[in-house]
Image (cartoon, rainbow, N blue to C red; front, top):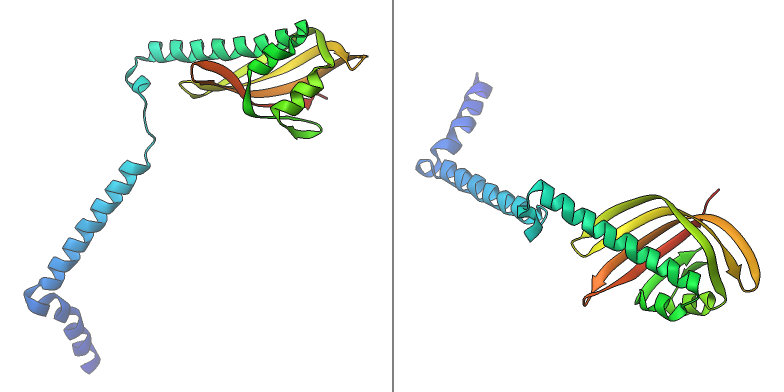
Length: 183
């Protein structure tokens, strides 16, 4: 019996402490925690752009237009390699671009030195896929079949290409490209 009385006193004592101030403190603490959690949730949610107010049709048209721009610039770079216009190819590549192939990452300057002895004679882009990254950038992935001459030797290869294009200061440039040989 003594044990039970002690438990009852312990259970009722906090509620009676200072005329219910513990209950008020707990309520205030719960309210504060709820407000903090609400703030964290609001701050953590994805930011929306002005495009978020677009109709689904308008948003789809914007994504389609972005895809067309990125694919067009990728083809423009390939056409520059086909015509042997290394300067134009270089103008489509960001100064800080990273380009990766089986030998590893390379800078724009390293790639431009290498493509000086490279010319495409034919190419095709198959299974083109596009992922918009922002309203002014996107990722393109495709399988390329290409033929050409590299440093005096004919070649014919198939590879998978991934490129990231972005509009910088009103000009579209390739920021990243990776070539992986197809099996």
